[in-house]
Image (tube, rainbow, N blue to C red; front, side):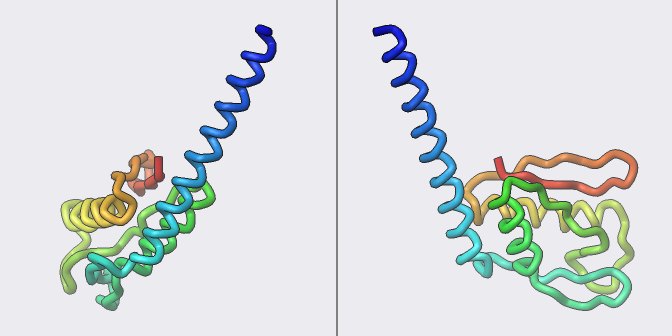
Length: 124
């Protein structure tokens, strides 16, 4: 009897994990489908080439689907023709992280890589 209960608890736990993973994947798929929503222009330092944030967000979301993190690219700024000060870099990072949070309905977890200052985000 005790082993049957233990087995049922294990089965229920496995089903719960499967349902959570399915929900996670559906959320990320929906986010990819709506990636252009709330997209914003950004500029690559050096050539001031205008790109849209959804190009980077789509890559991040695909990484999240495989339980990987996404390192936010260096040198992306919200304004053209400005120097890449730490404040300007952080302004882009903060807006990008907020954007990913809107798409997934959950703010991503941030990890700062020591030494190089890059930030990797993860979908929890």
